Amino acid sequence: MPPSLKFPYTPNSAIRDPARQAAISAAIYIVFCVAYILVSGWIAAAIATSTEDLQRIEAIKGTAFIVVTGLLFFVIIYAHLKRIRASEAQILAQEQSLLRNQRRSIAAMSAASIAHDLNNLLLSLSGLVDELRNHEKPDPFLVTLRKDIEIGIDKVLHLTARVASAARDVLPEERAHTDLASLAGQIIALSRKHPDVKHCSILVPEQACISATINPTLFEEALLNLILNAAQAAGEGGTIEVRITEDNGRAIVEVHDTGPGVPEEIRGRIFDPCFTTKPRGTGVGLLAVKTFVASHGGDVQVGESSWGGALFRLRFPLKPPK
Image 1: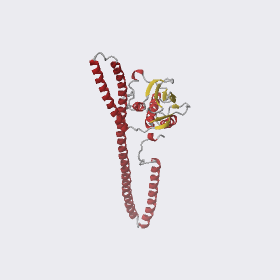
Image 2: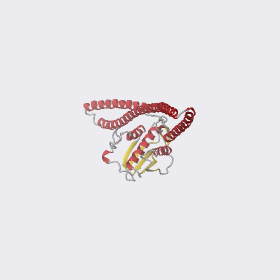
Image 3: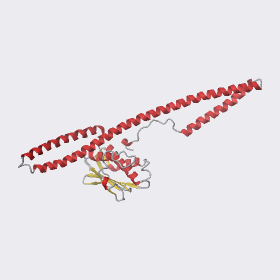
Image 4: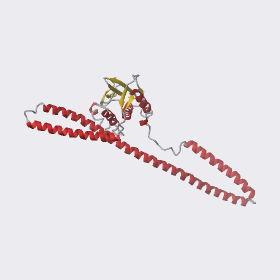
């Protein structure tokens, strides 16, 4: 299991094996009651001088038994409920901590995604400025206009750099030379434990070793989200295929499924923060995919799979740009 995708820690359960503990407790109580009845009955019979005396002793003995066992039950139940309450408080604190971290990650991914989109837009604007430069010579107004636009573009570029820098402070930034097929195999093995995936077939064609210098954490999150989405789309008995290939110095990771596919009219929106078509979706999963490709100088394509469902294709350089 990849270290960054381990399931969140939860405290030890207050009741590890309820049936076994209940059986042991009941057995101890039965033995105690039987022993008490036999021993106390023998003592009462030995000291009683008459039938009335025996009845009085039995009444006192029964009352004492009820009082003592009642107090014992109170102590046991109180301690047990207190332990459960402490465990619940610990779980609640951990959930709140995870929620805070998740919100920070979502904000960072959104910032990284916005910065990436802005940079792409600025590149397009720079191309228009170059065209403007070719036609500005006769007109001083166009020269001034072009320079003002260039100043504005430069300021926005600095702003996007600051936004991206702030996102990197939250998102993991380590990079390592990684065997993509091996790492993908670990992620697929982990995903099979998910209830939405375990009823699907996951195919991984045999492929050559392809290594890339990537951020393993972001890659794991991206691929895991794509597999989960594919499983939810394909449904029970569906098929998912993960292909990893190489083309001209770029890694290509494809996730196919047999679901209904992604309607063409929303393909441009599915990577937007918080956009989702699922009743209980959060719109964060595909944002993690976009964050990965944006931080690695790559891109993601959405199309139709040969299986009839959706195809998500990630492309990114095997080596980071110098």
